[in-house]
Picture (tube, rainbow, N blue to C red):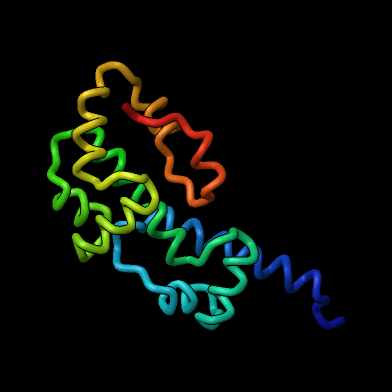
Length: 149
């Protein structure tokens, strides 16, 4: 039996990275850390972080926070939960960290986002709102995105 080639190993690593990404997408509201994610796919935390960044352009933690902020945006658009309730519903343990990350990704604090989108909610279908308000890390892409009034 021949030993695995570098290409075979690369494909196995990509499959493991997809499992990590899928787990983050499914379990974003649960406490997740890089060590636990790495253990789940039999990788070291450092190797997982490096490979994840190469494959997806951001660290596992940043990917997790982006998923949490996306979900928070949807909950805030509904308008029936406070910012604090949304923070904990998406798996953040610190309101300060949540607000900081939200503002970095969305461009406005969560309370401002909630107030603006609640006023626009009857005018925009939720499927469209999700598409045009998706958080974008790339600063160049942010310039071309539609802005909420």
